[in-house]
Amino acid sequence: WQDDRRTKLRQLSNAQYACLRQAFPEATLTQTPLFTSMRLSHDRAERLVSALLLERIALRYYRQHTEHAWLRVGLAKVDQLERVRGALAGIQGGLSSGSN
Image: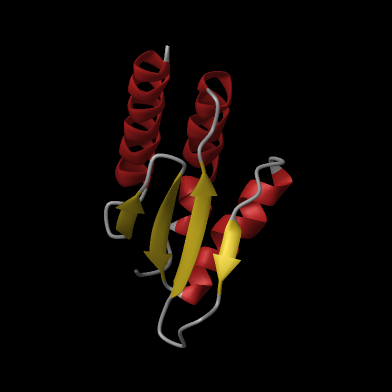
């Protein structure tokens, strides 16, 4: 049972990582089994957080550095990952005018 859960968790984590990598090829991504962290410019990170909040998707925003922000994206459930993909696809145009 535990091995099955670990495998499913790893698969879901890898799918979310791939989704974020595709949407943000310029971002630095760090993956764990339970979340993915993204490093983006503050401007782009703020626009992403605001746009996703409108879609009722919350990210954790860390403002520790003056040069960049870290966003933590908690692992989405299988049915929620499709919602995240759709939201990212819908907001990409409004996020493109920024850099890493």
